[in-house]
Length: 567
Image (cartoon, rainbow, N blue to C red; front, top):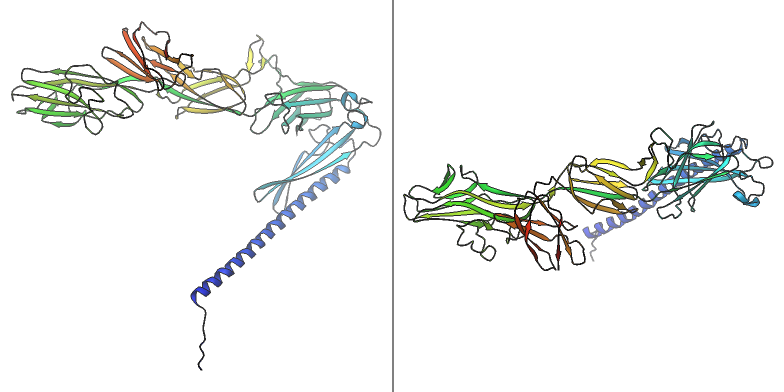
């Protein structure tokens, strides 16, 4: 009997390699995790060693010398020190403070009147590894060698709250005094009750306080100066054996976004046919010398204008034209869509036959369906020796409000930091900025109410109106409508029967040879500028409301705001 040797198939090899790969990846992951854990453990051990060494150093110096440079109590220990171990940088922060032992009473209830019973020392070593911020802290009590004694100073008690007066823990409190020796400059943090109590502060009237927290507003004391005669709050004063208390309020920052817009304007496309530069097509016609006429020997012809496609279209206005005809000739003008197809009569009655009498109102044409239009002329004659002529045509439209870049503004809050010699308040927050090339700027501000001023520019409307009340962590947006009112203008305010303003209503103003449509702002205002001294009719339509018309409004100048109430 013959026997055959059978080897491994390709599938066996692939499966085997895959299994080996899974095993190797698992082993590699375990090895990597082991190395990371070893590195983390080694780094923490180095941090503990640094903290322990610093704490042992503090235990080796005298009680009177136990303090930090610039701190309270003062001493010879540097507040911050850096070192590198195995390529990892470490920062050692040393903090020493007096504490009042509750065994003999706290504060005013202390039985012997001494609140500086002993010192607490804290050493924190911070480091970063694998992108993670780590720290190790050691805390120890240091008792005086004999009976507790007064340091000859006083107590500084600082309370940090939010906008609602609630305690705010974790706030950074920096205390500075450069008028005493040794000088004071250190930072600590409020506890869960929002308090920082500093015992043993040297007597002085020049303690500066700075309170902050990431993502929050800031608060501080202010120096008396020739400009700020009555600072609020001023520097704090420490009196021997007394407690000086102060409260500071900070809260999450808010944002205010300002967008600047130019007034809506009514303009027109027009052509006097000096040449064919404003025509896209001509068939058996000539445009020159100020007229569109039939070409020589032609009995009919047509021409089409360039397409009019405004960027901020609110509404179509008036079609006008000047036509001259003689016996046996005719000329009509139609309105086409962007593809060159005449608008149906259901959109513009009479358009298919064409218009020979002007002006023609185009306000019924929906801009959403027809954002671009063109004009088309048809000329006919029953003789090659005569021709009708078109010497002018125009198509008006109202555009905007459009973005207006680089508008300068000044925001001023209501909070003050004092007053000058004339008792004029000095405001805490004054922001001078511009809306930039994008016509929009977002400011990060603390909670307050802010008024706005536009230097050298006329503010027609701010929506919502200034001042802007900003709550903590809020986001507010406002639109600024900017422009120069002409001699004749009409501000139109649209509301419902309850007095609530209606945004995005369509307000149409018409007169002989004039028509303009402007949507109301979110605050219900439509501002018609560049008007004439005449009588207009205004019609307002809004979804969910009945269309309302005022048949006669006489414009006699910068007319006072007219209110229209939609039922």
